[in-house]
Image (cartoon, rainbow over all chains, first blue to last red; front, top):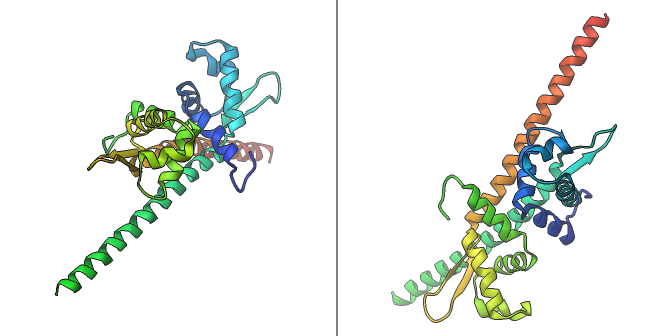
Length: 119
Length: 119
């Protein structure tokens, strides 16, 4: 995934990847450091092919990077994907908060206006 | 959703809810302020029943709150759900970063040791 502006399609891939409990448990494991695909597969109780498929979704989303410098493919966290997801959530929450505050100010102005008219 | 410690089941519900593009577009719409269920449904090109189902998933995840003070049910953003998702991502990224830094220090120590031995 490229740095800079995050496209809708990237956001879709990231949240689609995060939406699956197996993929989130893979991410949990990877926070401890890079490991090989077979080490990753061992405790998951699923075929290597199924794990590889999940890893592919994670890699395409930019949450994980896999590398094969020699005979063994290892996977590691890719923090940029996490940042993009965090940013999306933060933007939505901030936008909403701003609107909420504006509504509060508007209501406060109305109250003041009402108080003024009643005096 | 309760404040305080976020349970795994809450995290599952939140990321499951966020994993669907229709539900994310509902969240996008709601950042502009609270609206009624029928207003929300109008541009989505789906049945009211389908929208209600998506809203139920969003409400159970704690990302949205719906209220029916009178005849009309309105929906609004619930920022606590967003915070929980952001926190989960932040914790994973921080954990990984910490391990990565430790690994860096370890390698630097090794280099120093090697330099010392070669002198």
